[in-house]
Amino acid sequence: QVQLVESGGGLVQAGGSLRLSCAASGRAFGTYAMGWFRQAPGKEREFVGAISWNGGRTYYADSVKGRFTISRDNAKNTMYLQKNSLKPEDTAVYYCAANTASRRLQRANEYDYWGQGTQVTVSS
Image (tube, rainbow, N blue to C red; front, side, top):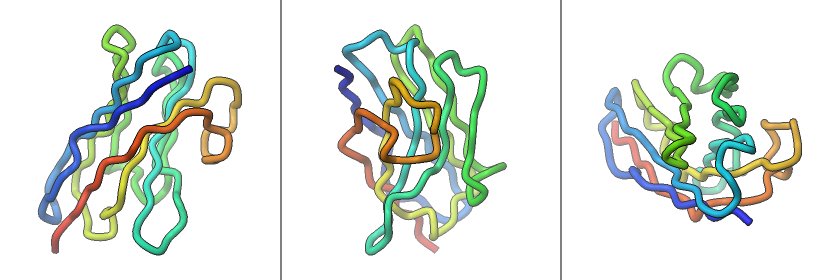
């Protein structure tokens, strides 16, 4: 079992920055990959990025590549999403998720555990 709690969401102006955190508990944090997803009103949940179990590999959606950075601190059982150059279209509820068995890190249905989500609103 893995429990995930996101934090760091809020309201920010376009062009600004925000850092989300995802605190994990339960199964040893350094043994599974993690991902970030987001869901805007009326839209499907979409992949934002993912990070391997040791942080050695990261993957990003084209829409955030070069603006968002995923990292993790296994000693602190925490994953981060640094978001720079934010745009109004980045407005969504952001979810972190744990992928304990699959290598398909871009598919939401491959993730076993999910956080409750944190709202990010980017004003123009």
